[in-house]
Image 1 (cartoon, rainbow, N blue to C red):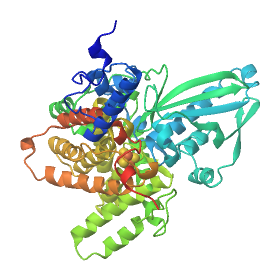
Image 2 (image 1 turned 30 degrees about the horizontal axis):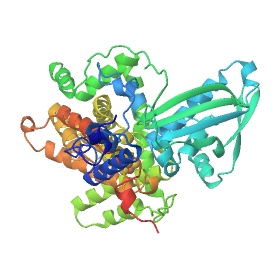
Image 3 (image 1 turned 180 degrees about the vertical axis):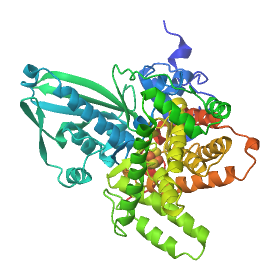
Image 4 (image 1 turned 180 degrees about the horizontal axis):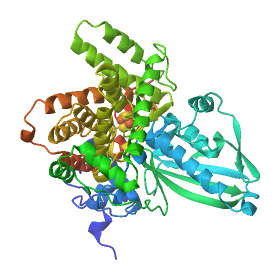
Length: 529
Ligand code: SF4
């Protein structure tokens, strides 16, 4: 016989109601979701505890613990510049560069299948899940995925090819697999479930089919900053770094004990981890510097009022802001205006889906290039100092990746623009010969003042707020350097490691609606007409 108290689900509510609004969800949403769970309990006759109701009301999907990106906080940092700074099509490292690398990887795997299997192939299919499905259309994920599938490499793809995928969506392409050729089109890239039990919010699956038979299948994850993993992924084998570090404190100790700058510690590690010469490391860094200045230059050359692709009909403003800044009678205003224009220029290129550099992501791709361009073109800082700045900036990005995240789908915009601004502050400080502690303080300050920043791209397009946000991130980086280089470094009260910890915790607590899903914030309040 049933207990009378339990029969009446509304009689006793203390077991059903959490006494506190949990972290990671706003009060209104929590109460609404909680009410829905409670109503379901009444309708189904099943009692839902306060704990279960709380868990279901916060509803932020956890990442699978076996992903390398989750386990990364252990051991010394082994990331290298060629993994970190990636050139590829905008507008989003996780939604375009990552997916394009994934389908390119799958294409390569497919070509290696035995000839008898390839002879049976009839189709290639890609499914997008989670955030890739929710906001992929706005990012052009299906175009990037299709480009990789037809064998185009992210770093070398012609932006005109990507523009043609947008302008002529019905095109078909032959994909050569051994002696066989399979035809693919945008229809083969499927926007699948936006929610569900995925290991990572940016999950994809790719299949090579022979009719209904699956010849090859692989599940992939675009884990942020253009990095990718797959089911069964094991990180590549690397040598031990010369100066192993997992925190800024350890990195600073190596620099101090060996009388080296952060940049030179990083150079020694890059050389030892991958067995490269100094020339090889710098040659790669130079390529990235050139790509960054090229993206600013091409963005500034775009006609004033060029309209960016997508439903927002956003007019570009880089050229106008630059021209007006040059006409300003105050030197300081000219500086801020020019720096903003450089960031807008590179970020608008990202919005066009043209080539960008992850530093650390596509959405934040205007921040570092703005400072690199400003240092080289305006300040005439020697190339060697900018190179060192790029290495110090990389150290900041690695630390954030190692202990927190570079993915907006995991941590909101603080993980993109926040980290980019922090990297840029380290770049400027290093290029200005600042001492180690000032480099750290500048990076800390820039990151600190982005903590909590959410990701809410309007209509799922990396344009609003992203493009202007790059300009603010660039200016904040300069402000962080200005403050750090004018204070007594040892009196700075917040160390970089503590701020990265705060970034990680804030990312965990942030409601999933603010993590690149376009379900809240500006994405909700801005009405497009
Ligand atoms: S709001 Fe920030 S994190 Fe989100 S897409 Fe834009 S730049 Fe990236």
